Length: 205
Image: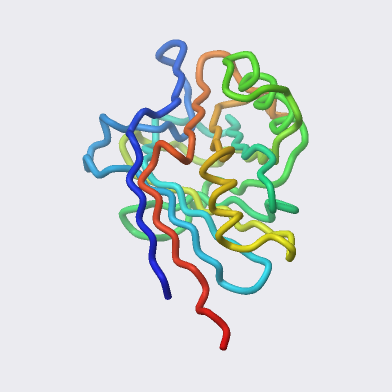
């Protein structure tokens, strides 16, 4: 497999308006406990599919029955974001106290916030996901997200990677029960600000 590593400027587009009493996973760079540069790793496990792993997050103090949302904007070549799974980076296992499911309200509202902050030119709805938190969580656990996406078969892996570098923004926020983001905590991290690692599929003979 070909491997491409592109290190971009670490100028994260993260926004925290205040220090919240409750927050979901937040981008921690450059103050991460493990001090490693966050990465976006893109893999192509099969034709028409891509996996995007985004690191550089840490847990905050979270109580049960709060909610968290994430979203990815429209990117050329992406037909759908199928799943979003949040992993404990120290164990490599998914957290069992969050279970993200597709939801329209987070996609719509995070797109609106991104437009308000000048990150995107319009408020076209994003691919949104929502979860209820089911356990008390302590701050400081490194974690990452893995997104599974379905690709347009007419778009090559290379073209998809370039589109993701150009337009890919991963948003995280705390929210109310139906996915409206809370005003005290939302983060927008542009893929181009991360160390990008791409594992291309093998060339067919």
